[in-house]
Amino acid sequence: VKAYVGEINLLIPWTSLLRDNSLLDIKDLEITIRPKQTNDQNATDASFELSSMFNSMNTSMLIAQECLKNETEEDTTYQGLETFAATIDSILARVKVTLIDTVIRLEHLIDNNDHGVALEIRIKK
Image (cartoon, rainbow, N blue to C red; front, side):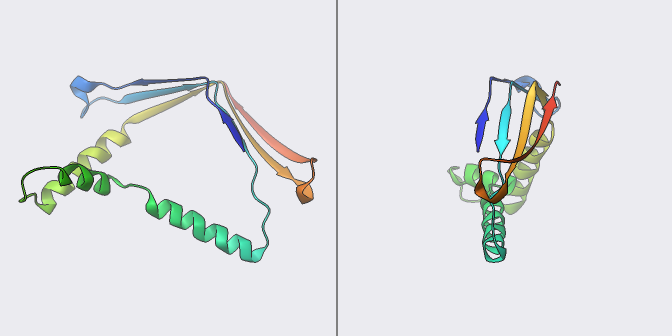
């Protein structure tokens, strides 16, 4: 429903990218989520939409293909593509995220009223 981010800091170890962790600090994050009320048919449609969204997300293999597509050499092998994808996976697996002063709020409105219940999670660090 709404979100706010106070500050984002990203530290990337460019000289040792394949060895060291990248650090992502997110400060003063506030997220409010309100699940959509659905009937059984709408739930099936929402499930399909969610599945479709996740399937369309870029994987490291697709990212590698896109990067190598711009290469001038036509003899790029699948093995090279797999190696490049593994390198991307290795870098992404070593991203450490720190949440500082975070509020995650899950709201449930009863019969689309202004009244309902909420669960609020506060994370200091």
